[in-house]
Image (cartoon, rainbow, N blue to C red):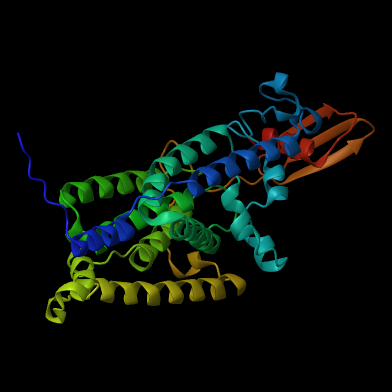
Length: 362
């Protein structure tokens, strides 16, 4: 039996090649590299923490200097407050008054504990790999880092009394970029309404978790807004019709068939997003370096990161203690509740004294 199989024309082959060029799948490597980097930094942080040497009690002491701080100090299985500070946690006072602006970037590579690290890294892998496959490592790498910066910036304007660490701001930036990418490239997707509802539900649930205490929801919101705007700028797709007709015109010589590369709404959203990004980052940086506390200008904004209930309080604990050293005895008195604890300690360190103060004030 004879079969008649027609081969594609040269023009059709050119169009197919160009379509592959514009919509090809990339091999993701940067997002996995970021995940590995976060894990390595956490291991280094635990090595620096050295709980057995710097604390009175440790969890999983068999791990040696990689063992964790006690649950009453860090329930996430991680390092101490002082270790996170020394490694580059976001502290507004140090950023503004001691010119340590690098903390806005370094904080997104640190994590409070194993649970914190696992939750962020698994989510980043799921979301980030899909985006890197579609848009490549350059755009998604920039989206990740800039969103993390945006989250840290908004957090530093509102969170004035505690430190902040974690890559969740970058994670929410990836989610925001995924949402705006779906919106700006709406016409090229099938089943887009269902995808939109699913994505919005996931983002809403994750932001809702931020109303619990000890979660920096301002970093989440800042990262999401940055990623959402960046998605309109970085992740815009040309129209299918433009791609086909753009490269078919040289063969068919029909300029009238050529369509615009982008739709009008894509161009408008690109311009507006770029303006909002530049304005937002500029205003935020000026306010931060001027020492502005954004809570003074928004009396209800603190509810975005913590809603007080009968089960928990949103006010950070006062860990101020009075310490007296008498030989090898350390007397620690909590300034907030008046409780006092006397410990025998041969080699007192700042980390050990801070742990005693935390236990006394708890």
